[in-house]
Length: 258
Image: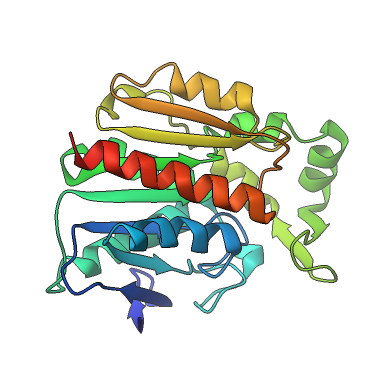
């Protein structure tokens, strides 16, 4: 595994890892969600599925998260996460191992970023896996308690304790919510003509099944939507992670075998 520091369009450091087999079958970019990192268990599971199938895997920490890249979480926006994905792919084009078309896989806002990239550059993307994806900023705000959203707007801050790192207090500016309202996968979903793999936890209350279905129903091509029984928005349990890895591997085989 190669670990590198590249520079994004804002001159910030972005930490990227590249895992390359001897004879790669292809290339995949894997993207985490809000406040996440490339080392989260579910992100490692996505990565492992592609490694098992002989792919070069590129994963990275966006800026403004709790990973190894520059920036502060409080300044996170959907736009900045997406731009970092674009910048990582742009950098990858200069590398000897770069291949097109490539796979994209992401979780939550990372799911949004990968699907949005595929909408914007469909010819570059072989297949895309937006997992527990944010479908639009508006829909994601709507599932939050109204009192919480109102307090966030009034005070300028959303303050929450991390579920994956107890004791870590996450503070996010209202600018995140304002920025998110400009993001929506549905208007251009018809451009996602490549194979699409979707998954969502049965108990996901952040990007619930009914929202996933809205996107799924607009997809024109080969598509799958799996509900992971008993799972939340973020996947932690070993049984869920194993199920996800097997779904990914089966899907990669289907895509690669035409």
